[in-house]
Image (cartoon, rainbow, N blue to C red; front, top):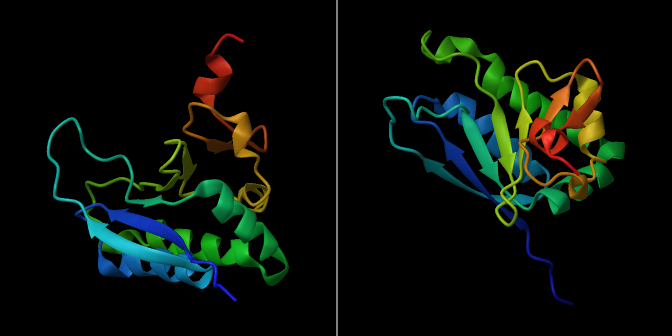
Length: 159
């Protein structure tokens, strides 16, 4: 019997992130069955500063589907806990760096899902059943007022 290979996740870490911030997301993705590879990005100066702290490039639909099957085991809670550990612990991030999100990006489509610092549990619950085919441009963010995932760029395009 042939074993199905694990999904690959490339984790890109901003130069100012600490290993204490990097490890929770790596551990959570590994626990969810992904094979991870971590890369530290060189420091950037100037207007092209990174807007995120950690970017995880992985096949999003396969990841979210797999995460959805683990809901009975509270799989999304592991991701939620990891993201909050990464971006919630401000003590290890310089004061000049505002709370930056963790971003999940599909390498095939370039679609990004932004996991903001204040993403509520409801957002994580909806994430595991999110139909990514409804988005073309992204980035996709959770709208707390409308209580749903949306892309401003997709919604602004004329149909």
